[in-house]
Length: 75
Image (cartoon, rainbow, N blue to C red; front, side):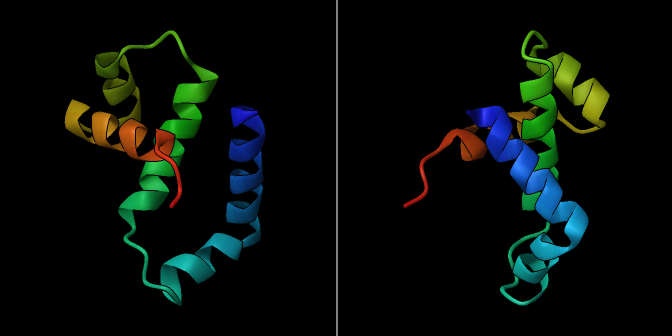
């Protein structure tokens, strides 16, 4: 289920549909990074935050915030 959502997001990103959200609706660019982190996490569920941060070239705080945000419910 989660993999399908990530696949759809990745496809929309490749097709440029997500750029509308970031450009027209001025969503913070960190969300694009967070989506990449979450997708990588779903592809590599056995990695801990330190391993994820090394692979994604960011801090563990960013990993924690990204995963927490992406796991949250849309309201």
